[in-house]
Length: 178
View (cartoon, rainbow, N blue to C red):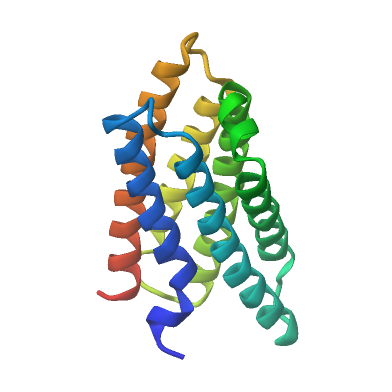
């Protein structure tokens, strides 16, 4: 399988991070059911791809538990967003806390990837660690959301998603193609 195929879940998630960030900044009021359903579809895709890779790692006798947990979380999140999108929209302030938790889980997963990259002597593992730490920090900020207004949280989330997506793309390109 090509490098592109192996990292399809990462590419799909990077695309969605930037797309969602731009939508949040340009049309925050319109960011409702369609965006939530789209997010759910993307999470199902990412979850299915991550589940496949976790099971592949298991069959090779490699550590797979964290990847399996992330896959299950992505699948559950996708199902909730698709079938209960209006409830998700109505609960956005509460959803922000869960989003922060998801960012922390993704950051911890990226830390695991850092150690795998480093152990295998692949280039630029420090960039991967920086991305992981930034994702965890941003997740904590969103989870503890000190902002009183949902508008401010949406704007901050939009910038955070764009920043995270662009940084993840930069790290992905330099880690695997340079």
